Length: 77
Image (cartoon, rainbow, N blue to C red):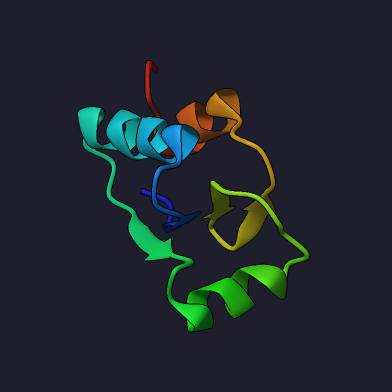
């Protein structure tokens, strides 16, 4: 399985969707809520300004791409 890090924030429906989607497909991930200033700064190091921001094996994903997630996680294959 790939290493997945999701930068989230409170009250973010797309963040909740991605987390639920991965959980439903039994894919592990690390969540970093940007209410924590360290995580916010880490996200901004990638010039990312919106959540969810995803690192998929270290590769930045600035918008949710389920096809890329499915391929990397072997979902539906």
